[in-house]
Image 1 (cartoon, rainbow, N blue to C red):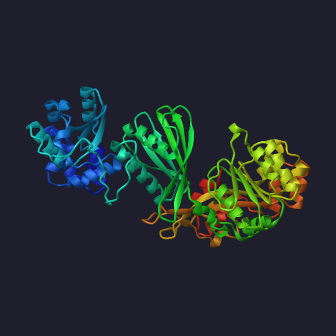
Image 2 (image 1 turned 180 degrees about the vertical axis):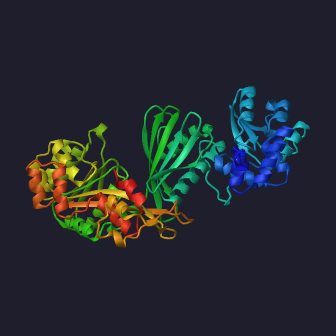
Length: 565
């Protein structure tokens, strides 16, 4: 067994963060066992570590409030809960009481024994507060000696505040001073997610752990494990920010948050809570309005694909359908098209569930099935308001599909989405819904199937080891291309996320040609339509992904993750 394998808990974390050497940590473990002391106490006594730096790191990593014991008034110490035997045996001391809450000063949040003992002895709920280990040792001694030696003159408005490393000051939560740490922690999570370029934040309570994950470049990654006891308060804070009912925990709720990150920029969060076995799971979708202003050139369309999309947008009527799974970038593709069409002389209306990004100059409607405002009802209303362009968030049923098709046939440009695997299957899906084949063939002008793949970091990507010709052919590369093919792989650097930075679209853009229209009207299936698309040299999703690989934009591994069955 290596020495590193002998480290666990906070010892391993401190070593990995460079706050303590491995030798010092192992020595402290031995000393703590021999002298029956807490690990951190032994480590600090060794003189090999900065106890203030450790306290700062622990508070940040565990999402707990950091408190300076030197600012505590002896008048607020709950002396009725001071028990010499507990203070002697446990590296923790009660420092304040608020209603039914007892605040306990600790230095090691991985050790739950002190909190459990104080909870049992007091009959109250306990809240951990991180303090400097050196200061805690002195405080314990002074309390045992009967002389707190603390600063006097503070009154009962005493507050526990997070010590922010950058000196920033965040507004306290109106629900109570002792909630300020939660307010600051939530703000930090939101800002960290924005800085990392995350698309979603997942806040998940389980039986024994509480974790927060970010979806970055389409992949979920764990970022922090706050204390399980913090789950309810953190969820409540997000509900307050989202204007949800904080007393309702039995049913899902939806809300929105607008976070101003500068004088000129704000980020919206679409928030959903859902009750699970061990509490409410909260997911926040990060909606950056600037993503709708990227322009078509930033989305990754190949030149011929871009031309097909632009030509379809230029038509005064017809239907453009964008298809793909959730999170494949359909909304951005649609909003990009709407922005191209958004001119003073064009009347544009959208029905969405819900409207993710506010687009100035476009009439956006949130559907509300409970109130009777379905996609179909919104479409009927739009058609009475002299529209030029209509966008339907999703075609889910025959009624919506029928109205959208009729609108496309009668002089309106209609944009919408479906959930299918590729372009040919989209046509089969409409037929299966019950839309007459003739109507499909005459109304639908273009179908865009898409995925999002992680883009290789230009700063650190490295040439891939030469792969055998047979392997490249099996992957789908054309025989005439494999000899000159140069592939790249992800490496990882300070500028990226494990070798990837940002995402790029992979598209199958299929125009409904005369031949494809004939197959639809003859009742042809998706296989027949795909075969005709191949004859017309329309690249499928796999071929488009391999083109991105050949261009050095994407790794073969990522192309396989996104498009290979």
